[in-house]
Length: 213
Image (cartoon, rainbow, N blue to C red; front, side, top):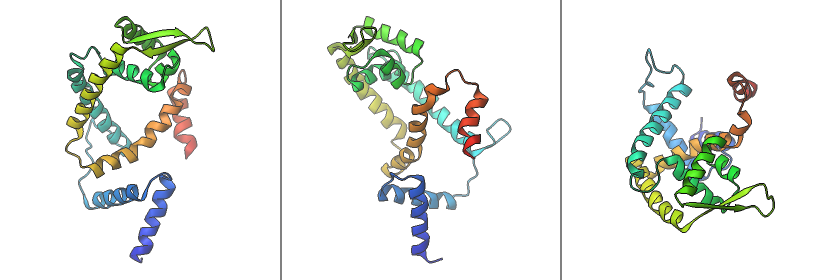
């Protein structure tokens, strides 16, 4: 096949899969795929390891998340915030600009009960204040206090440094490729996870996997 035709076909396949991808995104994707084809190193599998590529990828992401959590504990020390979930919730409140409690909790991917407890602790520490929603007197809106803003500045710096620690060995193109390939997963499940609460796992699998085939 003519090289130009082959490249156009590759671009067409990429565009179908990632319609919002740019030319630069395609170049990174194409080069990474070519490198993968040349690399014959088999995926790590064994008696107690996942047998599918999905499982191996999920295990890798899970272990990176666990390692990130370990180092996060060190990063948060001395900031006035105990956990990355508390930081995420406080940061979400500021990003959403005085949201309702439930809006902040769900946007931060927290369960309602857990998120409510965290918000109470953040208020007790003086990082948040609440006031009655003018549109719905039954609801409360949240606002980050000056003390909370100061804490966020410190935490953001630490989290930025932590991200640099974790990924400084990757070049910018590799980082952008990882982001490009995985951002769709985050976007998809961030939008539907609440609808799956209370459902049986088999029903969720049927909805996501089986019915999509």
